[in-house]
Length: 423
Ligand SMILES: [Zn+2]
Image 1 (cartoon, rainbow, N blue to C red):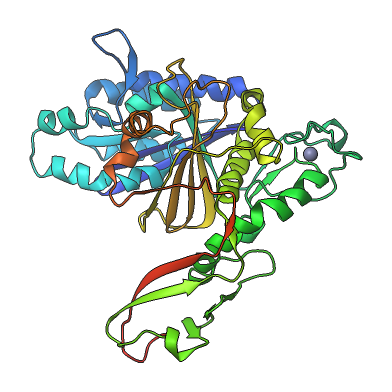
Image 2 (spheres, rainbow, N blue to C red):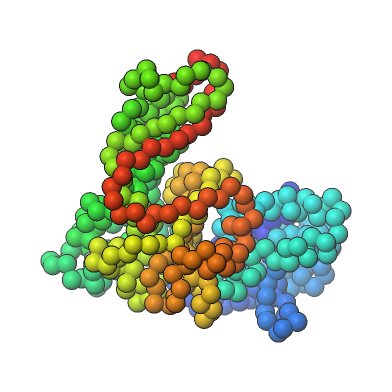
Protein backbone atom coordinates (compact mmCIF):
# COMPACT_ATOMS: atom_id res chain seq x y z
CA UNK A 1 0.00 0.00 0.00
CA UNK A 2 1.36 3.40 -0.98
CA UNK A 3 0.32 6.48 0.92
CA UNK A 4 1.02 10.16 0.62
CA UNK A 5 -0.03 12.75 3.15
CA UNK A 6 -0.65 16.38 2.44
CA UNK A 7 -1.24 19.21 4.84
CA UNK A 8 -2.17 22.85 4.32
CA UNK A 9 -1.87 25.29 7.19
CA UNK A 10 -3.11 28.85 7.56
CA UNK A 11 -2.97 30.91 10.70
CA UNK A 12 -6.23 29.65 12.15
CA UNK A 13 -6.90 26.49 10.24
CA UNK A 14 -5.26 23.29 9.10
CA UNK A 15 -6.37 20.67 6.66
CA UNK A 16 -4.79 17.30 6.09
CA UNK A 17 -5.61 14.49 3.75
CA UNK A 18 -3.93 11.46 2.36
CA UNK A 19 -4.10 9.29 -0.66
CA UNK A 20 -3.70 5.55 -0.36
CA UNK A 21 -3.54 3.05 -3.18
CA UNK A 22 -2.21 -0.40 -3.91
CA UNK A 23 -0.85 0.84 -7.17
CA UNK A 24 2.15 3.09 -6.88
CA UNK A 25 1.44 4.80 -10.19
CA UNK A 26 -1.95 5.98 -8.97
CA UNK A 27 -0.32 7.70 -6.00
CA UNK A 28 2.47 9.11 -8.12
CA UNK A 29 0.08 10.54 -10.68
CA UNK A 30 -1.95 12.22 -7.99
CA UNK A 31 1.12 13.59 -6.22
CA UNK A 32 2.66 14.90 -9.42
CA UNK A 33 -0.53 16.70 -10.35
CA UNK A 34 -0.68 18.25 -6.91
CA UNK A 35 2.98 19.23 -6.68
CA UNK A 36 2.92 20.78 -10.14
CA UNK A 37 0.54 23.44 -8.79
CA UNK A 38 3.20 24.65 -6.39
CA UNK A 39 6.41 24.06 -8.26
CA UNK A 40 8.53 27.04 -9.25
CA UNK A 41 11.60 27.07 -11.41
CA UNK A 42 14.48 28.78 -9.67
CA UNK A 43 17.19 30.92 -11.29
CA UNK A 44 19.49 27.94 -11.65
CA UNK A 45 16.74 25.95 -13.36
CA UNK A 46 15.94 23.70 -10.44
CA UNK A 47 12.41 22.74 -9.64
CA UNK A 48 11.61 23.67 -6.08
CA UNK A 49 8.56 23.77 -3.94
CA UNK A 50 8.37 26.42 -1.29
CA UNK A 51 6.51 25.44 1.81
CA UNK A 52 5.42 29.00 2.28
CA UNK A 53 2.86 29.89 -0.37
CA UNK A 54 0.76 32.89 -1.20
CA UNK A 55 -2.80 32.36 -2.33
CA UNK A 56 -3.44 33.78 -5.79
CA UNK A 57 -5.87 33.55 -8.66
CA UNK A 58 -3.52 31.13 -10.41
CA UNK A 59 -3.36 28.81 -7.44
CA UNK A 60 -7.12 29.00 -7.02
CA UNK A 61 -7.67 27.97 -10.64
CA UNK A 62 -5.13 25.17 -10.49
CA UNK A 63 -6.53 23.79 -7.24
CA UNK A 64 -10.06 23.86 -8.63
CA UNK A 65 -8.91 21.89 -11.67
CA UNK A 66 -7.05 19.42 -9.49
CA UNK A 67 -10.00 18.85 -7.16
CA UNK A 68 -12.41 18.42 -10.05
CA UNK A 69 -10.17 15.73 -11.47
CA UNK A 70 -9.88 13.68 -8.28
CA UNK A 71 -12.90 14.43 -6.09
CA UNK A 72 -14.99 11.47 -7.16
CA UNK A 73 -12.21 9.12 -6.10
CA UNK A 74 -11.24 11.10 -3.04
CA UNK A 75 -14.28 12.84 -1.51
CA UNK A 76 -12.10 14.39 1.24
CA UNK A 77 -10.97 16.85 -1.38
CA UNK A 78 -14.28 18.69 -0.98
CA UNK A 79 -13.00 19.80 2.41
CA UNK A 80 -9.83 21.06 0.74
CA UNK A 81 -11.96 23.04 -1.63
CA UNK A 82 -13.84 24.58 1.32
CA UNK A 83 -10.51 25.36 3.02
CA UNK A 84 -9.29 27.37 0.06
CA UNK A 85 -12.65 29.13 -0.44
CA UNK A 86 -12.07 30.85 2.91
CA UNK A 87 -8.75 32.34 1.79
CA UNK A 88 -8.29 35.75 0.22
CA UNK A 89 -5.74 36.42 -2.48
CA UNK A 90 -2.47 37.34 -0.82
CA UNK A 91 -3.10 35.16 2.26
CA UNK A 92 -0.10 33.08 3.24
CA UNK A 93 -0.38 29.39 3.74
CA UNK A 94 1.98 26.53 4.27
CA UNK A 95 2.04 23.48 2.09
CA UNK A 96 3.51 20.31 3.55
CA UNK A 97 3.81 17.44 1.10
CA UNK A 98 4.39 14.20 3.01
CA UNK A 99 5.99 15.98 5.94
CA UNK A 100 5.05 15.12 9.46
CA UNK A 101 3.32 17.83 11.40
CA UNK A 102 5.67 17.35 14.33
CA UNK A 103 8.56 18.46 12.22
CA UNK A 104 6.58 21.45 11.17
CA UNK A 105 5.58 22.29 14.69
CA UNK A 106 9.12 22.00 15.88
CA UNK A 107 10.02 25.03 13.88
CA UNK A 108 6.97 26.86 15.00
CA UNK A 109 5.21 27.34 11.75
CA UNK A 110 2.34 29.14 13.28
CA UNK A 111 4.60 31.72 14.86
CA UNK A 112 6.08 32.17 11.47
CA UNK A 113 2.71 32.75 9.86
CA UNK A 114 1.81 35.08 12.69
CA UNK A 115 4.92 37.14 12.10
CA UNK A 116 3.85 37.47 8.51
CA UNK A 117 0.35 38.35 9.56
CA UNK A 118 1.65 41.07 11.85
CA UNK A 119 2.99 42.90 8.88
CA UNK A 120 6.66 42.05 8.71
CA UNK A 121 7.49 42.17 5.06
CA UNK A 122 7.15 38.99 3.09
CA UNK A 123 10.62 39.50 1.61
CA UNK A 124 12.22 40.18 4.95
CA UNK A 125 11.03 36.88 6.32
CA UNK A 126 11.31 34.81 3.18
CA UNK A 127 14.87 35.99 2.76
CA UNK A 128 15.73 34.41 6.06
CA UNK A 129 13.78 31.24 5.50
CA UNK A 130 13.37 31.13 1.76
CA UNK A 131 12.16 27.67 2.15
CA UNK A 132 11.59 25.81 5.36
CA UNK A 133 12.13 22.38 3.95
CA UNK A 134 12.79 22.94 0.31
CA UNK A 135 16.49 22.44 0.49
CA UNK A 136 16.14 19.23 2.43
CA UNK A 137 13.43 17.99 0.08
CA UNK A 138 15.86 18.33 -2.82
CA UNK A 139 18.52 16.32 -0.97
CA UNK A 140 16.64 13.63 0.93
CA UNK A 141 13.70 11.30 0.61
CA UNK A 142 11.94 11.08 3.89
CA UNK A 143 8.99 9.59 5.64
CA UNK A 144 7.70 8.65 9.05
CA UNK A 145 6.30 5.64 10.84
CA UNK A 146 4.72 5.33 14.25
CA UNK A 147 1.29 6.83 14.38
CA UNK A 148 -0.40 4.59 11.86
CA UNK A 149 -0.70 0.86 11.69
CA UNK A 150 1.67 -0.51 9.11
CA UNK A 151 3.20 -3.88 8.35
CA UNK A 152 6.45 -3.63 6.46
CA UNK A 153 7.69 -6.27 4.06
CA UNK A 154 6.44 -9.46 2.49
CA UNK A 155 2.99 -10.69 3.54
CA UNK A 156 3.49 -14.31 2.57
CA UNK A 157 5.62 -16.12 5.12
CA UNK A 158 7.25 -18.52 2.70
CA UNK A 159 8.49 -15.66 0.53
CA UNK A 160 10.02 -13.63 3.34
CA UNK A 161 13.69 -12.71 3.49
CA UNK A 162 15.02 -11.65 6.90
CA UNK A 163 16.62 -8.21 6.65
CA UNK A 164 19.20 -9.05 9.27
CA UNK A 165 20.44 -12.54 8.40
CA UNK A 166 19.23 -13.09 4.82
CA UNK A 167 17.57 -16.29 6.12
CA UNK A 168 20.92 -17.72 7.21
CA UNK A 169 19.66 -18.43 10.73
CA UNK A 170 18.47 -22.01 10.51
CA UNK A 171 15.74 -23.03 10.68
CA UNK A 172 14.41 -19.69 9.43
CA UNK A 173 10.92 -19.23 10.79
CA UNK A 174 8.61 -16.23 10.80
CA UNK A 175 6.07 -17.21 13.41
CA UNK A 176 6.41 -14.39 15.93
CA UNK A 177 5.27 -10.85 15.43
CA UNK A 178 8.41 -8.73 15.06
CA UNK A 179 7.97 -5.10 16.06
CA UNK A 180 9.98 -2.69 13.94
CA UNK A 181 10.45 -0.56 17.06
CA UNK A 182 10.56 -2.34 20.43
CA UNK A 183 7.11 -3.11 21.75
CA UNK A 184 8.37 -2.31 25.24
CA UNK A 185 8.64 1.31 24.14
CA UNK A 186 4.94 1.38 23.33
CA UNK A 187 5.07 0.50 19.65
CA UNK A 188 2.02 -1.52 18.69
CA UNK A 189 1.53 -0.07 15.24
CA UNK A 190 4.66 -0.80 13.25
CA UNK A 191 5.36 -4.43 12.46
CA UNK A 192 8.16 -5.86 10.35
CA UNK A 193 7.37 -9.01 8.38
CA UNK A 194 10.96 -9.40 7.21
CA UNK A 195 12.56 -10.29 10.53
CA UNK A 196 13.01 -13.95 11.40
CA UNK A 197 12.28 -15.39 14.84
CA UNK A 198 15.95 -16.04 15.54
CA UNK A 199 17.04 -12.47 14.80
CA UNK A 200 14.03 -11.12 16.68
CA UNK A 201 14.94 -13.14 19.76
CA UNK A 202 18.60 -12.21 19.47
CA UNK A 203 17.92 -8.46 19.33
CA UNK A 204 15.63 -8.88 22.32
CA UNK A 205 18.55 -10.31 24.26
CA UNK A 206 21.52 -8.36 22.91
CA UNK A 207 20.83 -4.74 22.05
CA UNK A 208 17.23 -3.85 22.87
CA UNK A 209 17.36 -4.23 26.68
CA UNK A 210 19.81 -1.34 26.83
CA UNK A 211 17.62 1.17 25.02
CA UNK A 212 14.53 0.01 26.89
CA UNK A 213 16.21 0.42 30.21
CA UNK A 214 17.67 3.73 29.16
CA UNK A 215 14.23 5.08 28.33
CA UNK A 216 12.34 3.30 31.12
CA UNK A 217 12.08 6.35 33.28
CA UNK A 218 10.35 8.33 30.57
CA UNK A 219 8.13 5.39 29.80
CA UNK A 220 6.83 5.42 33.35
CA UNK A 221 6.53 9.17 33.76
CA UNK A 222 4.51 9.45 30.56
CA UNK A 223 2.51 6.24 31.08
CA UNK A 224 3.63 4.58 27.87
CA UNK A 225 2.00 1.17 27.58
CA UNK A 226 4.57 -1.40 26.57
CA UNK A 227 4.27 -5.15 26.66
CA UNK A 228 2.08 -6.07 29.62
CA UNK A 229 0.87 -2.53 30.30
CA UNK A 230 2.38 0.26 32.31
CA UNK A 231 5.55 -0.36 34.21
CA UNK A 232 7.14 0.93 37.33
CA UNK A 233 10.87 1.51 37.36
CA UNK A 234 13.00 0.07 40.11
CA UNK A 235 16.40 1.65 40.31
CA UNK A 236 19.28 1.14 42.66
CA UNK A 237 18.26 3.96 44.89
CA UNK A 238 14.68 4.66 43.87
CA UNK A 239 11.34 3.37 42.68
CA UNK A 240 9.19 5.31 40.28
CA UNK A 241 5.51 4.63 39.69
CA UNK A 242 2.79 6.36 37.80
CA UNK A 243 -0.66 5.40 38.98
CA UNK A 244 -2.93 8.31 39.88
CA UNK A 245 0.13 10.50 39.79
CA UNK A 246 3.86 10.12 39.46
CA UNK A 247 5.41 8.93 42.70
CA UNK A 248 9.06 8.61 43.38
CA UNK A 249 10.39 6.81 46.43
CA UNK A 250 13.98 6.69 47.56
CA UNK A 251 15.13 3.65 49.47
CA UNK A 252 17.51 5.64 51.62
CA UNK A 253 16.94 8.95 53.38
CA UNK A 254 20.37 10.08 52.23
CA UNK A 255 19.28 10.00 48.60
CA UNK A 256 16.21 12.10 49.15
CA UNK A 257 16.29 15.71 48.04
CA UNK A 258 17.62 17.80 50.88
CA UNK A 259 15.57 20.94 50.89
CA UNK A 260 12.04 20.47 49.67
CA UNK A 261 12.00 23.58 47.57
CA UNK A 262 10.08 24.06 44.41
CA UNK A 263 12.87 22.52 42.42
CA UNK A 264 14.58 19.22 43.05
CA UNK A 265 17.70 18.00 41.52
CA UNK A 266 17.57 14.24 41.59
CA UNK A 267 20.18 11.69 40.88
CA UNK A 268 18.61 8.38 39.90
CA UNK A 269 20.74 5.30 39.56
CA UNK A 270 19.40 2.73 37.12
CA UNK A 271 19.65 -0.90 38.24
CA UNK A 272 21.31 -2.73 35.39
CA UNK A 273 24.47 -1.44 33.76
CA UNK A 274 23.90 -0.17 30.22
CA UNK A 275 26.02 -0.48 27.09
CA UNK A 276 25.80 2.88 25.32
CA UNK A 277 26.74 1.46 21.92
CA UNK A 278 23.75 -0.91 22.09
CA UNK A 279 21.45 2.10 22.29
CA UNK A 280 22.95 3.36 19.03
CA UNK A 281 22.62 -0.10 17.49
CA UNK A 282 18.97 -0.32 18.50
CA UNK A 283 18.16 3.03 16.91
CA UNK A 284 19.82 1.85 13.69
CA UNK A 285 17.98 -1.47 13.89
CA UNK A 286 14.69 0.45 14.04
CA UNK A 287 15.78 2.51 11.07
CA UNK A 288 16.68 -0.55 9.00
CA UNK A 289 13.32 -2.09 9.90
CA UNK A 290 11.25 0.71 8.42
CA UNK A 291 13.02 1.73 5.22
CA UNK A 292 12.15 0.34 1.83
CA UNK A 293 14.08 -2.89 1.28
CA UNK A 294 15.64 -1.59 -1.94
CA UNK A 295 17.98 0.48 0.30
CA UNK A 296 19.20 -2.48 2.35
CA UNK A 297 22.16 -3.44 0.12
CA UNK A 298 23.73 -0.11 1.13
CA UNK A 299 23.77 -1.14 4.78
CA UNK A 300 25.52 -4.53 4.75
CA UNK A 301 28.23 -3.39 7.15
CA UNK A 302 25.71 -1.61 9.35
CA UNK A 303 23.83 -4.89 9.66
CA UNK A 304 27.06 -6.76 10.44
CA UNK A 305 27.71 -4.26 13.20
CA UNK A 306 24.21 -4.56 14.66
CA UNK A 307 24.55 -8.34 14.57
CA UNK A 308 27.81 -8.17 16.52
CA UNK A 309 29.96 -9.35 13.61
CA UNK A 310 31.79 -6.06 13.10
CA UNK A 311 33.44 -4.07 15.85
CA UNK A 312 33.32 -0.28 15.79
CA UNK A 313 35.13 1.91 18.29
CA UNK A 314 34.03 5.37 17.28
CA UNK A 315 30.63 6.52 16.16
CA UNK A 316 29.25 9.92 15.24
CA UNK A 317 27.56 11.85 18.03
CA UNK A 318 23.85 11.47 18.59
CA UNK A 319 21.98 14.74 18.90
CA UNK A 320 19.34 14.83 21.59
CA UNK A 321 16.76 17.28 22.71
CA UNK A 322 13.57 17.46 24.70
CA UNK A 323 10.56 18.76 22.85
CA UNK A 324 7.07 19.04 24.23
CA UNK A 325 5.92 20.36 20.88
CA UNK A 326 6.36 17.04 19.26
CA UNK A 327 5.40 14.86 22.22
CA UNK A 328 4.31 11.41 21.14
CA UNK A 329 3.12 8.49 23.23
CA UNK A 330 3.65 6.12 20.32
CA UNK A 331 7.33 6.03 19.47
CA UNK A 332 7.89 7.60 16.10
CA UNK A 333 10.72 7.35 13.64
CA UNK A 334 11.45 9.65 10.73
CA UNK A 335 13.92 8.41 8.14
CA UNK A 336 15.95 10.51 5.74
CA UNK A 337 17.73 8.91 2.81
CA UNK A 338 19.96 10.99 0.58
CA UNK A 339 18.89 11.09 -3.05
CA UNK A 340 21.94 12.88 -4.45
CA UNK A 341 25.60 11.90 -4.75
CA UNK A 342 26.67 14.65 -2.38
CA UNK A 343 28.93 12.73 -0.02
CA UNK A 344 29.48 15.74 2.20
CA UNK A 345 26.21 14.83 3.88
CA UNK A 346 25.30 11.42 5.30
CA UNK A 347 23.41 8.90 3.22
CA UNK A 348 21.00 8.04 5.99
CA UNK A 349 19.73 9.83 9.06
CA UNK A 350 17.09 8.86 11.61
CA UNK A 351 15.03 11.00 13.94
CA UNK A 352 13.50 9.05 16.80
CA UNK A 353 10.76 10.47 19.00
CA UNK A 354 9.94 8.88 22.30
CA UNK A 355 7.66 10.82 24.69
CA UNK A 356 9.32 14.24 24.88
CA UNK A 357 12.71 12.99 23.83
CA UNK A 358 14.12 13.38 20.34
CA UNK A 359 17.22 11.63 19.00
CA UNK A 360 18.78 12.56 15.68
CA UNK A 361 21.39 10.08 14.49
CA UNK A 362 23.44 9.23 11.44
CA UNK A 363 23.31 5.60 10.29
CA UNK A 364 26.97 4.56 10.28
CA UNK A 365 28.84 2.26 7.87
CA UNK A 366 26.77 2.73 4.74
CA UNK A 367 28.61 2.03 1.49
CA UNK A 368 27.19 5.29 0.15
CA UNK A 369 29.27 7.37 2.57
CA UNK A 370 32.96 8.06 2.34
CA UNK A 371 33.06 10.01 5.59
CA UNK A 372 32.20 8.71 9.03
CA UNK A 373 31.01 12.11 10.35
CA UNK A 374 33.03 11.73 13.53
CA UNK A 375 35.18 14.75 12.74
CA UNK A 376 33.42 17.84 14.06
CA UNK A 377 33.81 19.72 10.77
CA UNK A 378 32.11 16.92 8.84
CA UNK A 379 29.39 16.59 11.44
CA UNK A 380 28.69 20.33 11.29
CA UNK A 381 28.06 20.14 7.54
CA UNK A 382 25.41 17.50 8.21
CA UNK A 383 23.90 19.52 11.04
CA UNK A 384 23.63 22.70 8.99
CA UNK A 385 21.92 20.80 6.17
CA UNK A 386 19.19 19.70 8.54
CA UNK A 387 18.06 23.25 9.17
CA UNK A 388 14.92 22.28 10.99
CA UNK A 389 17.05 20.58 13.66
CA UNK A 390 19.41 23.48 13.87
CA UNK A 391 16.53 25.89 14.31
CA UNK A 392 15.16 24.35 17.47
CA UNK A 393 17.24 24.93 20.55
CA UNK A 394 18.51 22.80 23.37
CA UNK A 395 20.35 20.10 21.44
CA UNK A 396 23.13 18.22 23.14
CA UNK A 397 25.52 15.93 21.31
CA UNK A 398 26.34 12.69 23.05
CA UNK A 399 28.84 9.98 22.36
CA UNK A 400 27.33 6.48 22.36
CA UNK A 401 30.49 4.68 21.26
CA UNK A 402 31.23 3.03 24.58
CA UNK A 403 31.01 -0.77 24.41
CA UNK A 404 31.34 -1.45 28.12
CA UNK A 405 28.44 -1.93 30.46
CA UNK A 406 28.31 1.08 32.71
CA UNK A 407 26.07 2.06 35.55
CA UNK A 408 23.78 4.79 34.40
CA UNK A 409 22.65 7.63 36.55
CA UNK A 410 20.16 10.16 35.35
CA UNK A 411 20.02 13.68 36.65
CA UNK A 412 16.56 15.07 36.62
CA UNK A 413 15.24 18.43 37.63
CA UNK A 414 11.79 18.15 39.09
CA UNK A 415 9.49 21.03 39.79
CA UNK A 416 6.81 20.51 42.36
CA UNK A 417 3.40 22.16 42.37
CA UNK A 418 3.05 21.81 46.11
CA UNK A 419 5.41 20.88 48.87
CA UNK A 420 3.62 17.65 49.72
CA UNK A 421 3.92 16.58 46.13
CA UNK A 422 5.48 13.63 44.61
CA UNK A 423 8.50 12.47 46.58
ZN1 LIG B 1 17.10 -13.33 10.61
